[in-house]
Image (tube, rainbow, N blue to C red; front, side, top):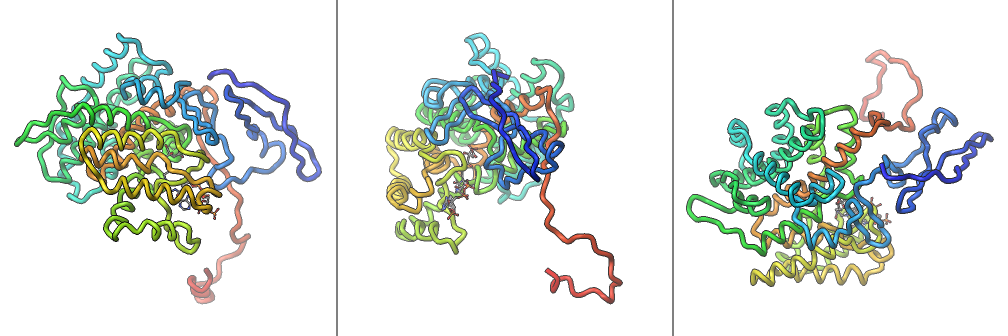
Length: 439
Ligand code: SDX
């Protein structure tokens, strides 16, 4: 762990007693009040539903400054990584802590190629899913099933970990492509050893027995950038899920499978699908953007403006800025005009001029424009959360390994404040009032 400084302690006075709480400061001057002794010393726990004020760990993987719109992986700005790197380079950076040199990159690429196929018996699993199965359900089921084919799981030593990481990163891409072929009733396309990571994915997605598919370099570069933008994001909902599940010493496959399920939610990684469905609905109803804004502002309407707002960013999500430009570049290079982009640009303009959104620091997040690019690539809407998962996988693996390698690691087990009935005794059944009346 990079250096963490100890500052002057904080004090808490409770029941007339004053307690000193250690305060730590990270390398970017974030401060944390260490409450790990609070229950023992003061007989109380903290209360923070949604963990908005709670730091779960010390980490040297990803840094976010939500007020300045800064995102760095292992110290490197997201803008530089997205512009200059391959996704597999960034995956290596997140998992190993440094960018690979040429020899390490070639070895890493060789591992990803070597582990790109899934066991033929796993292909049979796809037959069991209904055609309309959501690909996130398939992905989560297939990832945890990988543990039955590779029982050695996380063997000892860096080499075993590297192979397991390569296996997951490579096979998740194949599983995703197969789930897409399943949905459209086309035959599965095997990975090709001569293709690099992103081109191989596009090959498996779009090649068919009837026509060879040649990945367009513009689309390959856009996919590299898309996956890099999603590769990690410190302790978000799905990453915290991976850490919590892994803290019980569940294996990496089981922990990642749980992370896939957490990412699926519309408030999290499922938002990129919800954004496109929202834009399609606006388009289908004549482009009435104001209706969506009205609903999003209506406190009596649970409707949210998908792709807007963020727990950490209180300014423009730096990834959204890159994704916005990427969507316009890709469509320009491919000669595509998508009315949904016009609607998205109009929606952003209206929201950012509306006090409801401005006063709550609600800006476009990573999910607002990324779906537009995926549409331009020809990827079906239901696949968008899966694309997010493919990108986030190296971050989940890095965070899981950081947690498992922490000598101070403990199983995650939050507490609560109980507010239910105090002790009472069982009435005979004929003296009980109807349960419904009691609630
Ligand atoms: C991701 O955590 C991460 O890092 C996640 C992620 C990653 O890379 O892992 O960045 C990926 O999940 C991005 C977020 C994708 N989700 C969406 O786009 C769904 C729409 N956004 C919201 O549901 C919401 O903004 C969240 C869930 C993203 C954040 O919610 P918070 O931090 O819990 O904020 P909140 O619900 O407390 O909202 C504060 C206020 C409320 O109004 P008031 O009670 O003050 O009147 O803002 C309002 C909310 O009603 N609000 C919105 C809104 N987001 C917040 N109102 C309308 N539309 C929205 N999108």
